Image (cartoon, rainbow, N blue to C red; front, top):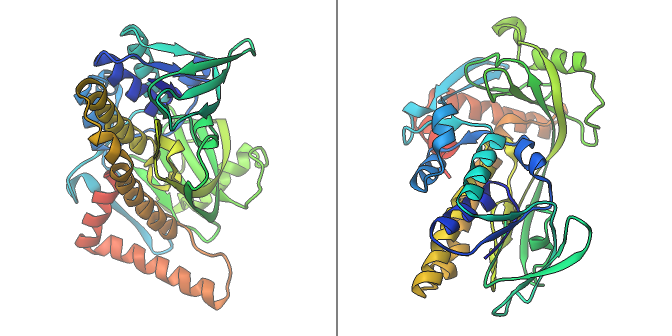
Length: 387
């Protein structure tokens, strides 16, 4: 088995396969230090934690993860909180930075005899419709090489070799939500004991704790804004304005150590299987970060594929592999629908024309329903945590 990419999807898949005695190699274009330090999402759904526990992959998050169960909305009509662990299915999130989870998974994979090649970039996948698909790679020294296996798992993201190698006829559903965020990582303790969603006439602002000393923030900005365009003083001033710090208390400031610009886009590829090539994680579908679904979908898909591969390779039963695409797409589209709903809840048109006023009135009505309706709160909680 060849696994392209050493993110959560690739490493969960690799760990499960190695534990079951299946030959597996992970090809990762980045170096190990980069893999273990790249900051990504940190909110793990209850089902994700169950999957990791089931396969013995949850030791680190159980020691260091923080249970999180509250979100706070700040709007022009005031603020309100939802303790979603007491709503819907009664499940919380576990906050555990993705780079720490990846480090845990990578260490365990290598300790259990898993093979991984860093600095090895997959260029293309050939002959996926045959018995021995080929992966063309560029090794760390720049030389080309060829790998062959019975199956290939494309866990290498939206720009990886797996997507580039898909046959004609692959369907791509895509939506640009027309919203851009400035993503920020600050060396600053959290200012709320909740995820903060601020809806403001100047644009959305978000607060998400990562650790006791690090907080992720988001600021809606104009499309095309460079990551370095705003000074730190402007960033903090804008965050305090949109999060209504005068009414609800100041933010705890600190050095901004990471910036990125995120255009909120979604896409889904169908099918997720092309002969011996399977798409997993961001390679299967890109989802906006508005509802923290990406890493959770990746872990779910990796576990589904691992079970199907083991059943095929050890028992000669291909039914799980045949059902992989349809099964995972059900979860992907559910997550996409909720993410789309969240984008509409948190962002509104900035104009004063009649259409903008209409859409903003709808948004305020949705927030009112979320604040006052128990059935709406139960629906939110189930979909907010569920995958």
